[in-house]
Each structure stands twice: as structure tokens, then as C-alpha cells.
Image (cartoon, rainbow over all chains, first blue to last red; front, top):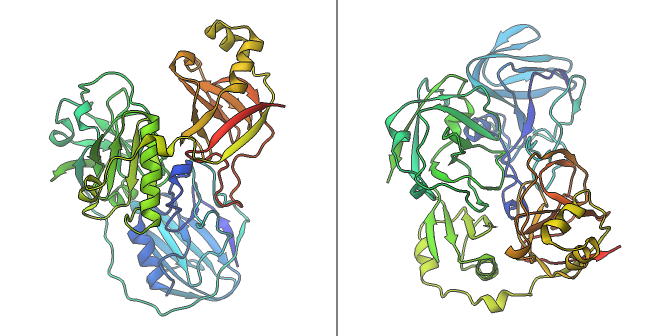
Length: 273
Length: 202
């Protein structure tokens, strides 16, 4: 069992999410940085589907009430066990406190524990969905979390690395004909502090609409670049709604870099064909 | 019908109307069950069907299949009766927009054969068509900060029931005590796409 000592501003349990229910209005959810989650799980010998913790900017502190094997991936942050700075795969004894510090690069750290965070799954996933409220609540001080049974062998994993500049590949469509210009590819955009698990909001040159009016609601995918009336793009992340009424100019091929994009970061787009 | 790409692994089928969306949804659902189509999510919208999580070649596969007959899918979904108390805050206003008396507006709602066109906004929130354009109503100018679970509302030519309490801009005409979304059930939503719905006066 784990006791939450310092929950941080938004620390949630996340796994690969709950795809397959979008037709019922259920968001996919899941870890924003799926690659960092996969690495953390592999490092402690967990299957890829195991649940871990996702922190936001300021980390968290956890007391392990039983011996555990832990790995922290994702954002660069100071990792301490009982106040001693450490790194790599950690073996901690009962009563040890793990402190994941403020992210110095990136935004979200992933804390995997051998055996996984073993809360009750909801619709096949242990992920907290911040949009719909499905899944376990976000971490709060004093909360306890069950740990599953450890299995499997440790796998060495290359470090992910966090890029300073975010360069995103975009497939145009499905509604690129609603727009007249190519501003998206011709100028830089900045990550807005209003970004969250639902979407990464950008500010920059407004995108020019060729077609006025409203789009009847239609299904949207992860990475969709939705453009509301003000022309500032919003890129859908894991907790995105399943349908939307704003036109989608294009779809970002890989949203993982946005999981680690700090407010103010510069984003550039290039067209994929 | 036109197929648009939505990224590397999704296709968006544009349809003439909600009936054609439903026909495609049923046809492709069958093909998925038969192992002819691999897709993670089949998500209907107002006039589109999104196939999310398809493999390369899906577009060619789609083009090789005949357009489904809308008559085959019509009225094939399960029928759910929702006991409804017609006492919504906006009922009188809606009746006025329709140029009907309140009892006549209730009669219209209680005799309409609704079909779930698609879900969205919240888990289990069903957009039900059936009223037709003639009885379309605009959303409220400013949404209510909190609409109780079970509220029956209208927006555009759709009728919807809030499965959970949330902010909302639909015009409220009634309420039900039915549970519409429960994660312990499979499927978790009572009113999935294609479900036929009757609002039965309670």
C-alpha cells in the first residue's frame, strides 16, 4: 500500500485509457505521455497495461508501507528517497518516502511501482478522466493506494528525452476545406497556460476560416486540431470529448511531445503527406 | 457519401442525413463482428460516422462495399421507454415557440418516436432525433450552471436526457428518475446509438 504524503496540484492514476466506448460519449483518457508510461512500467517489470501515477509540474510525495520497486520517467525532476537524491530503478523498504520534485524540464512525471496501482478498473481502465469524472479521484493528501502483485522481469529502457522545441507532424483534414490560409505551417505558436489533459491550447496567428457557420457535431480523434471562433487552435489530448462542433483543420500525428510542453513553449507544425 | 481522412488511422464518412449515418453504423458494426473490418471505435455524429483506429487499406475496403440501404437499419434498434414527468422549467416557453398549448406540446413529446442519433457531451448523453426540423428550438442564450441528472431537454431538433448533473444550455421540458449511465452495466449507457426511445408520461 502507498500513502499519499504530498499529492501535488494534479496527480492522477493513469494507464492506457478506455478506448472502445467513444460511441457512448466516454473519452479515451489514459496517460498523456504514453511512451514515458510504457518505459516506467517496463523498468519495474510491469505489463504495458499496468497503471502508474502521472504528476503535473510540481511532482508528489508517497510513503511506501511495504517494500517496493519503483521507476520514475517523463519530466526531468529531482527524485529523493528519504531525503537522499537518487535515480534509476529504486528498491525501497517499508516506510520509505519517495519525493518527486518540481519538473525542471517537461511537465509530467510517471511513477510506476512493480505490481501496478491496483485500484478498481472502471470500463476496463484505472485512468482518471478529468473531463467526465470517470475512474478514480485525483490524489489527495492522506489517501491510500493499493499495489498489485509484482510479476515479470525488468527490462532496460532507453531514456526518452524531452525536446526544447516542439515540432509536430500534421495530417490535414477532415475539415481543412473550412479554412483558407496556411497560417498553421507558416508561423510559430505558443503553448497557453490554459492547457490541460483535455487539450493543449495554443496562441499565435489566428487561423482564417473560409466557411462561416456551425459544423454539426461529429466524432473527433486524439490529436485533432480544433479551431473555435477565435481562430486559436486547440489540440485534443487524452481526456478530449468524443464529439465536437468546431471544424478540425488537421490531426497531429504524435501528441506525446505536448504532454511535456510547458506553458510558453514554441510549437511548429509541418504538413505530412 | 464522401470519405475524409482524420489523421493516419481514422476515417470520417460524410452522410446525407441521420438515417444514412445509422445505416452505415449498423452495416459496419456487422462487418466488424464478421471480422471484415478492424476498427477500435465507430462513432456516429449528426451527419458523419467516424471510424477511429483503422488499419491501412480501410479506405479502399470501404469503397469496395455497397452503400447500405437506409430502410434496413430503420427501426431495428432496441426500444426503451423512459417514464417522464413533463414539468420542465422551459416547457411553457417551448410550447410558445411551437405555437402550441402546453398540453399539446406534452402530447407531441409523448407521441414522438425518438431514435438515438449519437452520444456526446457526457458519457451516456444521447442526442435523440425524431422531432424534425419543424420543432427545432434554439439553445438557451446563457447555459444554466447546473442541470440536475435526469433532466429532459431540447436543443436544435434533438431531445436529450442529462445522465449526470452538469452545466447545460438545453431547454428543459421534463425529468426522469431512470439511471441512464452506470459503469457496472455492459453496455454502460442505456441509450446507445440506434436505440429507439419513447418518453412515457409518468
